[in-house]
Length: 115
Length: 114
Image (cartoon, rainbow over all chains, first blue to last red; front, side):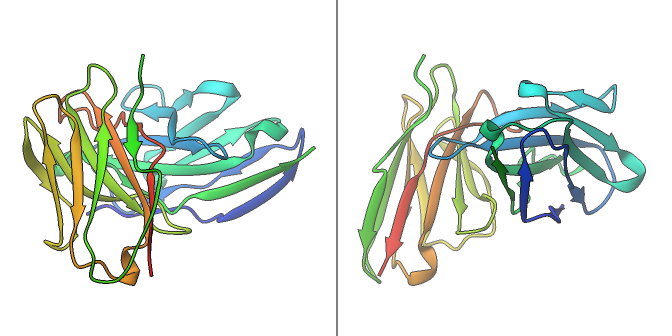
């Protein structure tokens, strides 16, 4: 089964700084990729997703992610973060080869943005 | 449009007890998945219900069981609780079993086992 690695467990930035959160999955094949976000006191919600096509995916609130198949990676980026981006970010991978359609989540990255 | 609702939001149990958590899916959704999120970890898949049957199961013991009702709502039952079951239990709904990557989550039920 797939495993997902999020190497940055805690990230602290100042407003307007650029953000890149790493996400790697364990092996190749046909995958769907997701980033979910959990703002303080709120439920997990989808930030963006990649199913096929253009490997550069744009999501809500100015976030984007790039799928690099050769590196098994799906890193999340934002050119200029805001205080309101403070949240937990989870990468998830769904491996279509096994037919289970159940996404596997990484352990998450806690992002704190100082005003 | 009602999102996913879960109850209770918080509860405290002692070792050996049993607990039942409840979930109402987002309007129009027919599939419910349950996840366990331990502190500092990502959500771990427990099982998925569709058409009132368990369709897929993660690596959790038989102490974890569930049910789905005709109105698509669902329950998660955990028997013989132990300290390691302390976690946030998340319910996620979706439409059909083949589209479970696009999940809508509830706010969770935080279980503390003493």
